[in-house]
Length: 261
Image (cartoon, rainbow, N blue to C red; front, top):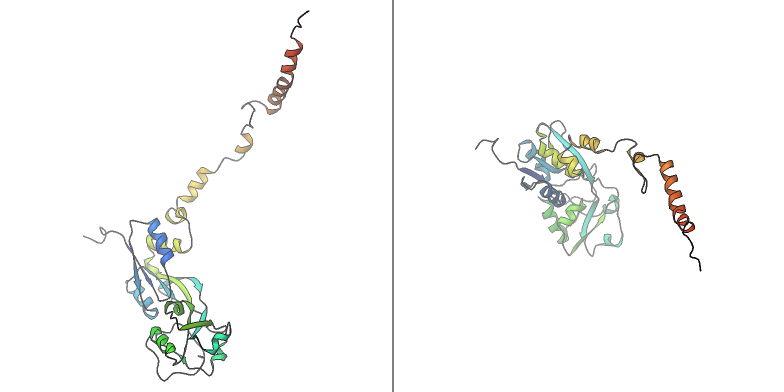
């Protein structure tokens, strides 16, 4: 079977913390004959996967190199610090980076935040992954600053988190190779941007249909009102109708002969 004979499909990569469920559901409703395959990928490897053709599009964390990858920023996440539930940080609703100055703040190798100056004290070793760092926080070794979605992804009953007001934020974007902007990629862009079915699947036909279905100018004024005869002047028709309607019954009663006794 040649590539042109192969059934169409769509491969969507996504980094940890991103939940593509809503968009996948809409895709399956609109394109039930085109299977969508989800490909989880570490944040650091997402752009390489797209460049190598391992996915048609993907949810990535910015920044990305725009020389060969297109990107549509979608949202910015709140940055939080993950702490044990009995930590002093839990006494407040929000902290600043300087409030963590005396704390060991873990810096995993797969960290997604870009710091100019990291808060807190460095640990002796860097954890390999965010999941490993979460385990260390639970063991009381240090704290961890991450996008809120990652704190939720690695939720534990013995841990909680608080927003860090002045920490760098992580932005999530939809990205794909610029030279591979296929019709299916356009369809998925439309879903992510909230386009309707008509604007996504029939972008070229929609304006023509709207023009053809638009009522002719002045059509509403030419529509005859209820109770009036089409094609006759409204004033004459209305006048005759009014006189016959009000005078007819009375004239009939006045013309009826009276019985003599």
